[in-house]
Length: 494
Image (cartoon, rainbow, N blue to C red; front, side):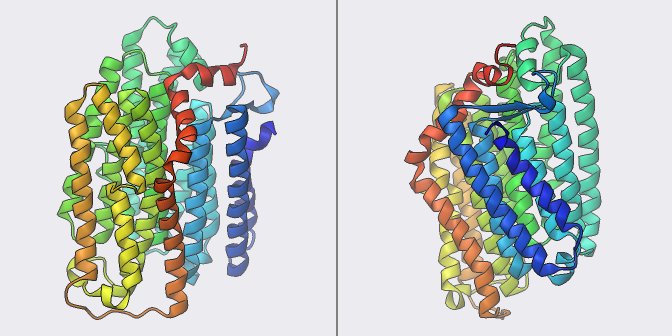
């Protein structure tokens, strides 16, 4: 069972490689991908219960002893994120069956999704900082394919910016890892945590911590490094946008949370204060963008930036309520952003536009779609008892406990901004004078609406059933609060 933690990485990688052999067989591509994701989801559930029952699972590849080999580690935080990523990918693929056109499906669309999931799950699971870079590159190369697939003018224009930013970010990542290795002499994250406390050069460690914050902040879209995200994410089709919005920024956020709780903890008065300030500025910047645009895609995209700030504010507080709230909110945001992007995809398909000012009256022809969207919007804003409420409440509590009153007030105020931004979509698209729409066939509409409803339902259950999830979230936050648990699981007696 010790190899079980590798399965959520190996299964999508293996079947993605197989799918490369017959890209034109759309039916086989669809069902092999769907079956692969169901198998991966099942294995991840087994791994979740294994971690809950037996603690952190760790393996060092090639039978090398840690820290000399590449360690893969599955603690509660990583396995919850792997589970969420696999679930959202499964539902987006289901949605894609009715949305993605034949040409895109025939040019490695499904292998691209599976390779991206391989990189995402690998980044969440790795215990080696350089191996994290490798998995980042796997998911990025797949995202390069997905963002240009179809060859539309806007895709080609925005993909240049997207690729350029990530190439620069990856180069900075390698330089920063090399800098860390030159000072510490190891790449194993548990071993870094042990040895970084023994290095009597706190100034250099703080510089490296800030460099890592720049690297992961560029990938996670924190202030002021989010400039590339809104236009780039708005370019590809809705299913790809849903995957990008739900997953890619979360990998950068996870990397910040992992490094800033595991080993960059010696100068919290500077590093974590800086993280908190940037998180608040990220919330402000995202709020301005969410209110400024009339494009439904960009409104939800700027809400991604707001969520990144909220999660990282919780991570910067370094106390149990805030860290538990960050984990709650991170998983909530994966689910609810995916659901909202799928729902606005249906709205765009019906109206033929993403401009709110050209919409109206959909509540008369698609009432179920309207009320489902409203539930998802309330969930995003954190209206109790929906999923956004619990995480944000815990983050605010953690902020108060850390005497960061004004930061907590910003978090609460952001909820009003989020609610206003998503309610604007509801008012413009579903109320007012009806506009001429493209009536979708019943089969296409069901193929789009049912996956979106399932995801909204899961997010509602996640909020209503949060009491039953507390033990899992507590285990995830405990590993961040007490790094010795992680170190002991990886290094053992080393």
